[in-house]
Amino acid sequence: MASPITPPRGMRDFLPAEKARREHALGVIRRSFAAHGFDEIETPVVEDVERLHSGLGGDNEKLSFSILKRGLDGDDLTAAIETGDVLSLSDLGLRFDLTVPLARFYASHRAELPPVFRSIQIAPVWRAERPQKGRYRQFVQCDIDIIGEGTRLAEVELITATAAALEALGLQDCTIRINDRRILNGLLEYCGFDETRWPQVLISIDKLDKIGADGVVAELAEGGADAAAVLGGILADLEPHLAEGGVELTVQAITSILPSGMDTDAVADLEALAHALDTLPPGVSLRFDPTLVRGMGYYTGTIFEISHPGSGSSVGGGGRYDGMIGRFLGTDVPAAGFSIGFERVVDLIELPEDAGQESVVLVYDPAVPLDRLVAIKSELIARGSRVRLDRRAKNLKGVLDRAAASGFRSFAFVNADTADASALELKPLS
Image (tube, rainbow, N blue to C red; front, top):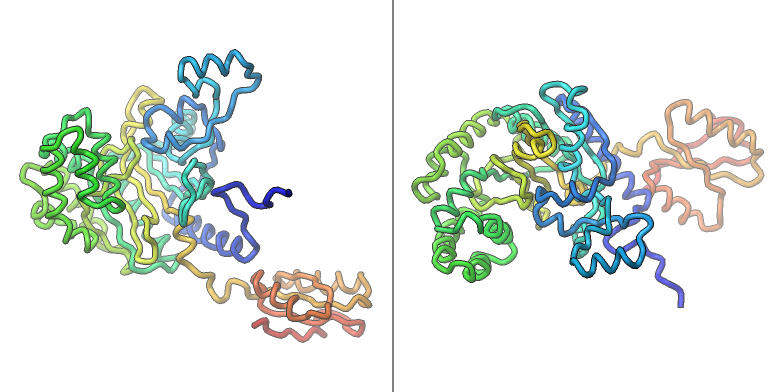
């Protein structure tokens, strides 16, 4: 019995029409980011396995694909089984995000880069996810990062550039939810969670939209029922505000929904951030969400996430990760980044009507001399048109439908009497 001829599970092929839509979206995002002063870089698809499993990637480290070392033998396998150290069989792994590779890139090239470096990375990443709608094992991330800027200017530039990209893509009703890890830590301390449990508590809170407040409390009760109960009460009080995406980014609004004693500097920083972002496009709004976690373990300050009513999951996110680059350099360097979830965003947009203009399919008779056919095609290309040749067939509708699906907007017949491109009668493809 033949094997199914399909891509690997969680990975996809793209037909021409879908590929055109993706490339259009990527071009819009690239141009928008570049207009805001960011420069594009490229990093390898693999990194050293120790770097990918250094504790910076949160739960995503468990989803990374590792590459077996060359020349392994039975003794190596036996040793790995006996020690339980499966990673000892690998020296490289596929990147699960673009932030860890960027930190390594900056550490490698710091002397060649400006003091404040604004980067663009648009590339595929890989995670051993359980495939489902909107979640794949290979997907594209569109990242911008600012390294070397320790003030709120970094967050302002990142959010401004990302909002501009969303507007350029034609997306409306986007909400950027914002929080600060200092506020999250203050909440955990207020509830009474032991600091050693904070990473696990944050992982549970990050599941709030999937398992609800009761599920979060149930997960955490085994390690401390009292602290979990306090957190459950806070989440219950927050529920009406979370249903609206959060509250305004003002000290008054933020403090009204938080327990007393939260980090006042963090709250003031969020309000100042909102003041600096009061000129965002009308289709993008800012809200404070104290339950926003962002699962990556490397975030240290402001965190943000994009939601859209057309998507059941976030369509982008990021934050400040001041401690990561110091892991490579031995000295801390401030850093922050924002990533557009391309696979979810591209499902929300359509190609503009004029995206396929100046494109024509020449439906030719076999009797047309080859040199004349090529000359007519070359003449149209020289005018700036996109041109495809299709032999005339009995099923003309099938030919034209395929052309329209590939983005062509017009067609013309070429027969033995067609002398040159001026003799063509262009007709629209419906």
